[in-house]
Length: 111
Image (tube, rainbow, N blue to C red; front, side):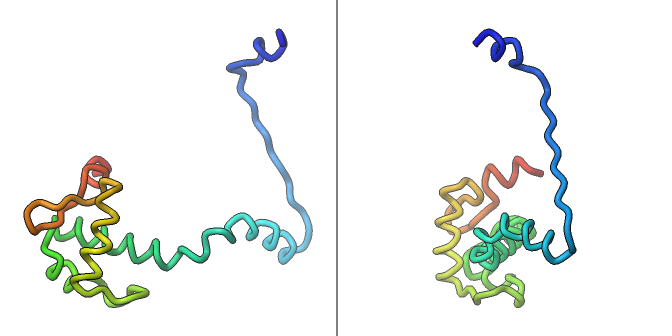
């Protein structure tokens, strides 16, 4: 036990080498990201929605829906925008002031 206490606060560095042909190495590295691939399009759409709210510095659900990029994975009408923004509001990413959705504390803190 004394040895563990003496090592607390010591810097540790670990390195790993993966060797082999390109395809084998890439397949080993790709397995780490497999869990999130099903959410990639959702996260991209959410990011574009938030970027739109920030770029507009807020707006009504209809105004935001009109300003969304056309290359989003799914189309957002005014109701879909408000449904999604209500979820993002729980994470302090947006706030509703009257009928205007604005960037929330977490987005404004990043600026």
